[in-house]
Length: 48
Image (cartoon, rainbow, N blue to C red; front, top):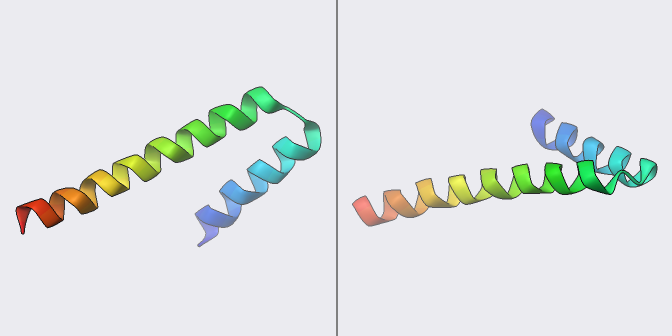
């Protein structure tokens, strides 16, 4: 929960500072993390 709040606060700070490059990098990291989680979950379903 704290990590989600931390990532959300980073997005808000990026939006406030209009630092789109950092925002895109942050979103790319989040997308990679989500893809990794989906791969793990999907992999568990395939194994089962």
